Image (cartoon, rainbow, N blue to C red):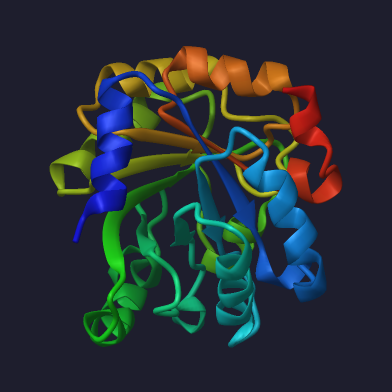
Length: 239
C-alpha cells in the first residue's frame, strides 16, 4: 500500500501545494481535538502529522484514535522515537536525521522500530530529515545530540538532500525546528528543490500567510505548520 506517497508525489508533479498540520501529543488535550478538527477540516490542510521530539508513551496512540473520530484527512506519524509508533495511523514518515552524525538517529532507532513496523499496516515512507539552524536550539537538536546545518552553507544542505535521495529516500524534509525564530530561507528551499527529483517538505517557523506563500513559491511541495497553529487556532482565517 503506497497511496499516501503516491498522492504526495502526484500532487508535486501537478504543482498542487499540500499543507500538513503537525500535532504534538504532549501539547494537545484530548478533549480539545474535536473542536480542533472542525477548524482543520474547514481549512486548506491536506494532511495531519502527529509526533514530537519528546512524547510520553501511549500518548500518540490516544491522539491518533481521537483524531480518527473527527477527520478523514490522512494521519501520518512524525515520530521522535519508537514509543510513538501506533498502527492506528495511516502512515509514517520513517525519518533519518541525515543532517546529523549520530548513528542512533541515522539508523539505530530504525533497527529497533523495524520489527514493530513489520507487524503494523502502516504505509512507511523513507524520509531524509535535514535540520537547519535557525538562531536557537531546538528540541530535535537537544534530543538527537546533533548539530543543525548552517543556513549559510547552502552547498552542504543541497548535497545532504541529494545524498538522501541517492540513498533511496522518497521525501526530503527541510526543518528549521519547532518554535524556530525564522523559517527555512527561501533561497535554500529554491536551490534544494532544483536538484531533487523527489517531493520536498518544509517546516518550522512558518507563522504567517506570507511565510507560507514564500515557502510554496520557492519550491516546497508540502509545508508543515505546528507552533503557529498551537499558539493561534485562528491562523487559517488569515489564509
